[in-house]
Length: 329
Image (tube, rainbow, N blue to C red; front, side, top):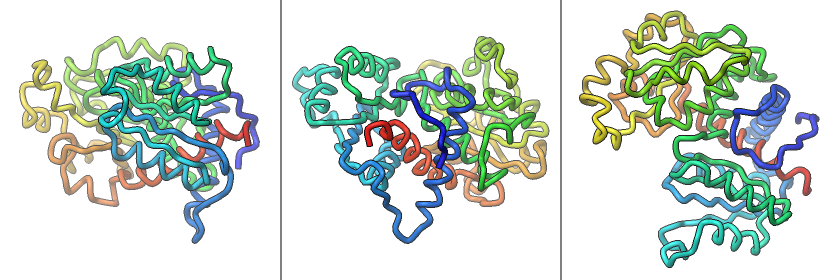
Protein backbone atom coordinates (compact mmCIF):
# COMPACT_ATOMS: atom_id res chain seq x y z
CA UNK A 1 0.00 0.00 0.00
CA UNK A 2 1.30 3.47 -0.87
CA UNK A 3 2.41 5.47 2.14
CA UNK A 4 2.16 8.97 0.62
CA UNK A 5 -0.19 11.24 2.59
CA UNK A 6 -3.38 11.89 0.62
CA UNK A 7 -4.77 15.40 1.09
CA UNK A 8 -7.37 15.63 -1.72
CA UNK A 9 -10.90 15.54 -0.29
CA UNK A 10 -12.70 15.49 -3.66
CA UNK A 11 -11.76 13.86 -6.98
CA UNK A 12 -13.46 15.95 -9.63
CA UNK A 13 -10.90 16.23 -12.44
CA UNK A 14 -7.47 14.97 -13.46
CA UNK A 15 -6.44 18.36 -14.86
CA UNK A 16 -4.69 19.33 -11.61
CA UNK A 17 -3.50 15.89 -10.50
CA UNK A 18 0.15 15.88 -9.42
CA UNK A 19 2.54 13.07 -10.51
CA UNK A 20 2.80 11.87 -6.90
CA UNK A 21 -1.00 11.57 -6.74
CA UNK A 22 -1.09 9.45 -9.89
CA UNK A 23 1.61 7.15 -8.53
CA UNK A 24 -0.15 6.90 -5.17
CA UNK A 25 -3.36 5.80 -6.89
CA UNK A 26 -1.47 3.29 -9.07
CA UNK A 27 0.42 1.76 -6.14
CA UNK A 28 -2.69 1.61 -3.95
CA UNK A 29 -4.69 0.00 -6.75
CA UNK A 30 -1.94 -2.60 -7.20
CA UNK A 31 -2.29 -3.49 -3.51
CA UNK A 32 -6.06 -3.88 -3.82
CA UNK A 33 -5.68 -5.95 -6.98
CA UNK A 34 -3.74 -8.41 -4.84
CA UNK A 35 -6.59 -8.36 -2.31
CA UNK A 36 -9.08 -9.15 -5.07
CA UNK A 37 -7.06 -12.21 -6.06
CA UNK A 38 -7.44 -13.76 -2.61
CA UNK A 39 -10.05 -16.26 -1.60
CA UNK A 40 -11.49 -13.71 0.84
CA UNK A 41 -11.80 -10.52 -1.19
CA UNK A 42 -13.09 -8.22 1.54
CA UNK A 43 -11.10 -5.95 3.87
CA UNK A 44 -12.41 -3.86 6.81
CA UNK A 45 -10.75 -0.65 5.63
CA UNK A 46 -13.89 1.51 5.41
CA UNK A 47 -16.02 -0.35 7.90
CA UNK A 48 -18.56 2.04 9.45
CA UNK A 49 -18.43 4.50 6.56
CA UNK A 50 -21.21 5.09 4.05
CA UNK A 51 -20.82 5.56 0.30
CA UNK A 52 -23.75 6.97 -1.68
CA UNK A 53 -23.84 6.28 -5.42
CA UNK A 54 -25.85 9.18 -6.83
CA UNK A 55 -26.18 8.28 -10.50
CA UNK A 56 -28.52 10.71 -12.25
CA UNK A 57 -27.60 9.10 -15.59
CA UNK A 58 -27.75 5.42 -16.68
CA UNK A 59 -24.62 3.36 -16.08
CA UNK A 60 -23.70 -0.31 -15.88
CA UNK A 61 -19.93 -0.63 -15.52
CA UNK A 62 -19.15 2.45 -13.47
CA UNK A 63 -22.02 2.12 -11.02
CA UNK A 64 -21.53 -1.62 -10.47
CA UNK A 65 -17.78 -1.13 -10.15
CA UNK A 66 -18.12 1.57 -7.48
CA UNK A 67 -20.70 -0.45 -5.59
CA UNK A 68 -18.50 -3.55 -5.59
CA UNK A 69 -15.43 -1.50 -4.64
CA UNK A 70 -17.21 0.03 -1.64
CA UNK A 71 -18.51 -3.35 -0.49
CA UNK A 72 -15.06 -4.94 -0.84
CA UNK A 73 -13.84 -2.21 1.55
CA UNK A 74 -16.68 -3.09 3.99
CA UNK A 75 -18.43 0.26 3.56
CA UNK A 76 -22.22 0.60 3.68
CA UNK A 77 -23.66 1.49 0.26
CA UNK A 78 -26.71 3.54 -0.71
CA UNK A 79 -27.77 3.51 -4.37
CA UNK A 80 -29.85 6.35 -5.81
CA UNK A 81 -32.34 5.81 -8.66
CA UNK A 82 -33.59 9.10 -10.13
CA UNK A 83 -36.73 7.64 -11.73
CA UNK A 84 -38.16 6.64 -8.35
CA UNK A 85 -36.76 9.54 -6.32
CA UNK A 86 -38.16 12.85 -5.13
CA UNK A 87 -36.57 14.51 -8.17
CA UNK A 88 -39.77 13.52 -9.96
CA UNK A 89 -41.64 15.67 -7.42
CA UNK A 90 -39.49 18.74 -7.97
CA UNK A 91 -36.68 18.24 -5.45
CA UNK A 92 -33.39 19.84 -6.49
CA UNK A 93 -30.15 17.92 -6.94
CA UNK A 94 -28.52 19.81 -4.08
CA UNK A 95 -31.42 18.97 -1.78
CA UNK A 96 -31.08 15.31 -2.77
CA UNK A 97 -27.38 15.44 -1.85
CA UNK A 98 -28.23 17.09 1.49
CA UNK A 99 -30.74 14.32 2.20
CA UNK A 100 -28.01 11.72 1.81
CA UNK A 101 -25.72 13.88 3.92
CA UNK A 102 -28.32 13.87 6.70
CA UNK A 103 -28.35 10.07 6.54
CA UNK A 104 -24.67 10.03 7.47
CA UNK A 105 -23.02 9.68 4.07
CA UNK A 106 -19.23 9.99 4.14
CA UNK A 107 -18.56 9.88 0.38
CA UNK A 108 -20.74 10.65 -2.64
CA UNK A 109 -20.07 9.21 -6.08
CA UNK A 110 -21.83 11.45 -8.61
CA UNK A 111 -22.72 10.91 -12.27
CA UNK A 112 -24.79 13.39 -14.24
CA UNK A 113 -25.41 14.21 -17.89
CA UNK A 114 -24.65 17.89 -17.22
CA UNK A 115 -21.08 19.06 -16.68
CA UNK A 116 -20.36 20.66 -13.33
CA UNK A 117 -22.90 18.87 -11.13
CA UNK A 118 -20.29 16.97 -9.03
CA UNK A 119 -18.37 20.23 -8.59
CA UNK A 120 -21.53 22.02 -7.43
CA UNK A 121 -22.25 19.30 -4.86
CA UNK A 122 -18.64 19.35 -3.65
CA UNK A 123 -18.81 23.14 -3.30
CA UNK A 124 -22.00 22.82 -1.26
CA UNK A 125 -20.44 20.20 1.04
CA UNK A 126 -17.46 22.49 1.60
CA UNK A 127 -19.75 25.47 2.21
CA UNK A 128 -21.59 23.48 4.86
CA UNK A 129 -18.26 22.66 6.52
CA UNK A 130 -18.74 18.88 6.40
CA UNK A 131 -16.00 16.39 5.63
CA UNK A 132 -17.81 14.60 2.84
CA UNK A 133 -15.76 13.59 -0.18
CA UNK A 134 -17.27 13.88 -3.67
CA UNK A 135 -16.03 11.71 -6.52
CA UNK A 136 -16.93 12.57 -10.11
CA UNK A 137 -18.13 9.40 -11.88
CA UNK A 138 -18.69 11.26 -15.15
CA UNK A 139 -20.28 14.64 -15.79
CA UNK A 140 -21.52 15.62 -19.22
CA UNK A 141 -18.71 16.33 -21.65
CA UNK A 142 -16.35 17.35 -18.87
CA UNK A 143 -14.45 14.42 -17.31
CA UNK A 144 -14.54 10.85 -16.03
CA UNK A 145 -11.53 10.72 -13.65
CA UNK A 146 -11.87 7.12 -12.42
CA UNK A 147 -12.02 5.85 -16.03
CA UNK A 148 -8.87 7.77 -16.91
CA UNK A 149 -7.12 6.33 -13.86
CA UNK A 150 -8.20 2.75 -14.52
CA UNK A 151 -7.06 3.04 -18.14
CA UNK A 152 -3.71 4.34 -16.90
CA UNK A 153 -3.50 1.50 -14.36
CA UNK A 154 -4.34 -1.10 -17.03
CA UNK A 155 -1.61 0.15 -19.36
CA UNK A 156 1.07 0.57 -16.68
CA UNK A 157 0.28 -2.84 -15.16
CA UNK A 158 0.83 -4.48 -18.54
CA UNK A 159 4.37 -3.12 -18.55
CA UNK A 160 5.15 -3.76 -14.86
CA UNK A 161 2.46 -5.68 -13.03
CA UNK A 162 4.09 -5.32 -9.60
CA UNK A 163 4.98 -1.62 -9.72
CA UNK A 164 2.76 0.37 -12.11
CA UNK A 165 3.97 3.98 -12.26
CA UNK A 166 3.97 7.03 -14.51
CA UNK A 167 7.56 6.77 -15.74
CA UNK A 168 6.77 3.52 -17.57
CA UNK A 169 4.95 5.46 -20.30
CA UNK A 170 7.60 8.07 -21.08
CA UNK A 171 7.95 8.20 -24.87
CA UNK A 172 5.21 5.63 -25.53
CA UNK A 173 2.86 6.38 -28.43
CA UNK A 174 -0.82 6.12 -27.53
CA UNK A 175 -3.56 6.67 -30.10
CA UNK A 176 -7.09 7.69 -29.06
CA UNK A 177 -9.55 7.23 -31.91
CA UNK A 178 -13.18 8.28 -32.17
CA UNK A 179 -15.59 10.90 -30.86
CA UNK A 180 -13.14 13.07 -28.92
CA UNK A 181 -15.43 16.11 -28.92
CA UNK A 182 -18.18 14.58 -26.78
CA UNK A 183 -16.05 12.19 -24.72
CA UNK A 184 -15.43 12.83 -21.04
CA UNK A 185 -13.28 9.68 -21.09
CA UNK A 186 -11.02 11.21 -23.73
CA UNK A 187 -10.57 14.39 -21.71
CA UNK A 188 -9.54 12.52 -18.56
CA UNK A 189 -7.19 10.28 -20.55
CA UNK A 190 -5.59 13.27 -22.22
CA UNK A 191 -4.78 14.73 -18.80
CA UNK A 192 -3.48 11.47 -17.32
CA UNK A 193 -1.48 10.27 -20.33
CA UNK A 194 0.23 13.60 -21.04
CA UNK A 195 1.22 13.67 -17.36
CA UNK A 196 3.29 10.53 -17.98
CA UNK A 197 5.39 11.94 -20.80
CA UNK A 198 3.62 9.82 -23.42
CA UNK A 199 2.97 10.96 -26.98
CA UNK A 200 -0.81 11.05 -27.35
CA UNK A 201 -2.30 11.07 -30.86
CA UNK A 202 -5.99 11.94 -31.29
CA UNK A 203 -7.70 10.76 -34.48
CA UNK A 204 -11.20 11.07 -35.87
CA UNK A 205 -13.37 13.10 -38.25
CA UNK A 206 -12.72 16.87 -38.19
CA UNK A 207 -16.21 17.39 -36.76
CA UNK A 208 -15.34 15.20 -33.75
CA UNK A 209 -11.67 16.13 -33.18
CA UNK A 210 -11.36 19.93 -32.96
CA UNK A 211 -7.90 21.42 -33.33
CA UNK A 212 -8.36 23.30 -30.03
CA UNK A 213 -7.57 20.09 -28.11
CA UNK A 214 -3.92 20.50 -29.10
CA UNK A 215 -3.74 23.69 -27.01
CA UNK A 216 -5.10 22.12 -23.83
CA UNK A 217 -1.92 20.41 -22.63
CA UNK A 218 0.68 23.12 -23.13
CA UNK A 219 3.52 22.81 -20.63
CA UNK A 220 2.88 19.17 -19.68
CA UNK A 221 5.51 16.39 -19.89
CA UNK A 222 3.77 14.63 -22.76
CA UNK A 223 2.83 15.76 -26.26
CA UNK A 224 -0.53 15.87 -28.01
CA UNK A 225 -1.09 15.51 -31.76
CA UNK A 226 -4.26 15.87 -33.86
CA UNK A 227 -5.03 13.73 -36.93
CA UNK A 228 -8.10 13.67 -39.17
CA UNK A 229 -6.96 10.42 -40.78
CA UNK A 230 -6.43 7.35 -38.63
CA UNK A 231 -3.28 5.95 -40.25
CA UNK A 232 -0.76 8.54 -38.93
CA UNK A 233 -2.12 8.09 -35.41
CA UNK A 234 -1.79 4.30 -35.57
CA UNK A 235 1.69 4.17 -37.11
CA UNK A 236 4.02 2.51 -34.55
CA UNK A 237 1.49 3.05 -31.73
CA UNK A 238 2.09 1.04 -28.56
CA UNK A 239 -1.53 1.33 -27.40
CA UNK A 240 -4.77 2.17 -29.22
CA UNK A 241 -7.82 3.39 -27.35
CA UNK A 242 -11.01 3.53 -29.37
CA UNK A 243 -14.02 5.44 -28.05
CA UNK A 244 -17.73 4.78 -28.30
CA UNK A 245 -19.29 6.56 -31.23
CA UNK A 246 -22.34 8.15 -29.71
CA UNK A 247 -25.17 7.28 -32.08
CA UNK A 248 -27.31 10.02 -30.59
CA UNK A 249 -24.95 12.50 -32.28
CA UNK A 250 -26.10 11.38 -35.74
CA UNK A 251 -29.00 13.87 -35.55
CA UNK A 252 -26.44 16.67 -35.41
CA UNK A 253 -25.10 15.62 -38.86
CA UNK A 254 -21.58 15.25 -37.52
CA UNK A 255 -21.10 12.01 -39.48
CA UNK A 256 -22.47 10.76 -42.79
CA UNK A 257 -23.10 7.19 -41.55
CA UNK A 258 -21.86 4.55 -39.12
CA UNK A 259 -20.76 2.40 -42.05
CA UNK A 260 -18.57 5.13 -43.49
CA UNK A 261 -17.15 5.87 -40.03
CA UNK A 262 -16.09 2.23 -39.65
CA UNK A 263 -14.53 2.22 -43.10
CA UNK A 264 -12.42 5.28 -42.30
CA UNK A 265 -11.77 5.03 -38.55
CA UNK A 266 -12.79 1.57 -37.33
CA UNK A 267 -10.04 -0.48 -35.66
CA UNK A 268 -9.45 -3.69 -37.61
CA UNK A 269 -6.72 -6.31 -37.80
CA UNK A 270 -5.43 -4.78 -41.02
CA UNK A 271 -5.16 -1.35 -39.44
CA UNK A 272 -3.32 -2.75 -36.41
CA UNK A 273 -0.54 -3.84 -38.79
CA UNK A 274 0.48 -0.17 -38.82
CA UNK A 275 1.10 -0.28 -35.07
CA UNK A 276 3.90 -1.68 -32.95
CA UNK A 277 3.93 -5.51 -33.18
CA UNK A 278 2.93 -5.81 -29.50
CA UNK A 279 0.13 -3.22 -29.69
CA UNK A 280 -2.80 -3.52 -27.30
CA UNK A 281 -6.32 -2.15 -27.76
CA UNK A 282 -8.55 -0.53 -25.12
CA UNK A 283 -12.18 0.62 -25.10
CA UNK A 284 -14.00 2.15 -22.10
CA UNK A 285 -17.31 0.54 -23.09
CA UNK A 286 -20.05 0.10 -23.95
CA UNK A 287 -18.86 -1.01 -27.39
CA UNK A 288 -20.69 -0.66 -30.68
CA UNK A 289 -19.37 -3.86 -32.24
CA UNK A 290 -18.49 -3.46 -35.88
CA UNK A 291 -18.41 0.33 -35.63
CA UNK A 292 -15.47 1.45 -33.46
CA UNK A 293 -13.80 -1.96 -33.50
CA UNK A 294 -14.43 -5.29 -35.18
CA UNK A 295 -16.11 -7.90 -33.02
CA UNK A 296 -13.37 -10.53 -33.47
CA UNK A 297 -10.64 -8.07 -32.46
CA UNK A 298 -12.55 -7.01 -29.37
CA UNK A 299 -12.69 -10.63 -28.19
CA UNK A 300 -9.07 -11.51 -29.08
CA UNK A 301 -6.95 -11.65 -25.88
CA UNK A 302 -3.79 -11.23 -27.95
CA UNK A 303 -4.76 -7.62 -28.61
CA UNK A 304 -7.70 -6.62 -26.43
CA UNK A 305 -7.37 -5.22 -22.90
CA UNK A 306 -11.10 -4.52 -22.58
CA UNK A 307 -11.81 -7.20 -19.97
CA UNK A 308 -8.70 -6.15 -18.03
CA UNK A 309 -10.05 -2.60 -17.95
CA UNK A 310 -13.23 -3.80 -16.24
CA UNK A 311 -11.21 -5.79 -13.70
CA UNK A 312 -8.84 -2.87 -13.12
CA UNK A 313 -11.83 -0.63 -12.50
CA UNK A 314 -12.71 -2.33 -9.22
CA UNK A 315 -9.15 -2.11 -7.86
CA UNK A 316 -8.75 1.54 -8.90
CA UNK A 317 -12.10 2.55 -7.43
CA UNK A 318 -11.24 0.72 -4.22
CA UNK A 319 -8.03 2.77 -4.16
CA UNK A 320 -9.89 6.06 -4.69
CA UNK A 321 -12.49 5.36 -2.00
CA UNK A 322 -9.77 4.19 0.38
CA UNK A 323 -7.64 7.31 -0.18
CA UNK A 324 -10.63 9.65 0.19
CA UNK A 325 -11.93 7.85 3.27
CA UNK A 326 -8.64 7.05 5.00
CA UNK A 327 -8.60 10.38 6.82
CA UNK A 328 -11.79 9.37 8.67
CA UNK A 329 -10.91 5.78 9.50
